[in-house]
Length: 576
Image 1 (cartoon, helix red, strand yellow):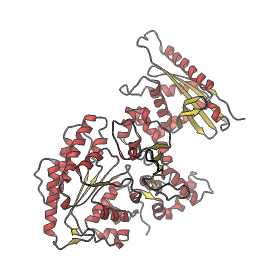
Image 2 (cartoon, rainbow, N blue to C red; image 1 turned 135 degrees about the vertical axis):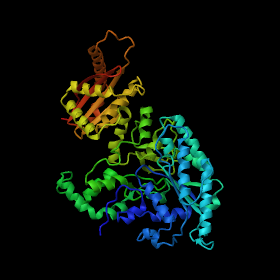
Image 3 (cartoon, one colour; image 1 turned 90 degrees about the horizontal axis):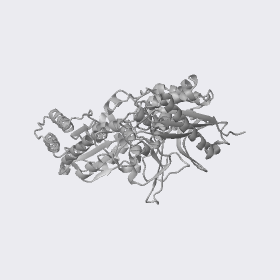
């Protein structure tokens, strides 16, 4: 019987008992628990970290019947039962001081109650120690002392600790530095509870989407191993190419026919074409920090597809931005809003190793969190270059489309994707028809939404705002494109035959403007637009498109004060 496409769930036992598709990760788990005592894994959200922890929980709980047919069932693993503590730090955000500590204590009390252990200590590190020791004593009494964990030759009663979303209390409060720092200290105290328990702890596994609290974890736990970029665990979360084919190959033909019927693929498209499109949209993630890239093969190093998007694709049978449809993580939006200029970059990027394994919310560089949260991925490494050994890029089409919307939401707030795409069509039509009045209306409506708290009266700020607005509408907007005489502010690609070049000029509104009418201000903005358009012509920004495009449009965009916009445009040089 064909297995069901999984729901977006996080419980291993439910996946197996409901006959759902499951990418077998048990060989990875076997190797981890053989090799490590305390380890940490960083992966983007919705990449299967919680399901991985649930699988490890079932394994250490001795639930062998759930693993029939999986790799580990035919290994030498003995499925001895261990006491398991599983915690998620993904608590509801609160601004109340001390609430995180109360929530952790409540969870520890509930876990103790389930095992008949009364938690009397009032500090979270002491409560954790009391729970661990209580579980150890319970299992030591219940199990025969002759029972041995044959994997490590030690008593089965040792405790397993699994912690999910360990960094949530910090990154969910990036807009409140005092609360984030307070939560950081609380987590430091909590992880201190691991100290001096090595003799009764079997295994600790911690996951998160960033390295935000990694330092605290490392300082309070002995010998923690970060497996996030170890090549042997690159495919531990998400779908590898082999996973994709083994799980979904029997659905390729059916899905292809649906897409052809919907006119989303050509009538003569093949299964190979479908698979190529799947990889183009959702593949490209690389979490191997050591294996040299081999451009002649697709499996060196291991590439990973976004599991959330793949599952939804086969449910809906349509190419869409599933992973990013609800917008970026709130913490990323806050970082962009606080420092928009630092989030505008061109890929590929050459970076040092520490840019992949650190995260400091006050750091000037956005690269670490963009990599850790899945907006950038490895696209090459050079072990011989010790200073800058890694190359990063945007992984796939889904992220390339979704990243600009992160900017849009940072500035303008959440807006339905259909509304954004509709605005994009209006914008393109206005540009191609030289409808300056419509363009001025679009820009002024958008700028009116800008938060006064975030506003920075500089031309550089408005470069970022305009790029966010245009990119958020689904238009390919490229910043700071070089030509022989300088760099244009924005180049837009409407198609492979239509390019648009935009230059932005901004001027602060004087404090005393009582004599200026609204139309006076707009005329001032138009005079700035004229200067911008003249710069495009003078510096010949359109020359590098002249042999590529059938149509080039040059736009001078003037902004006066907070929201008065002037637009002037003309056709640029085109190929004959």
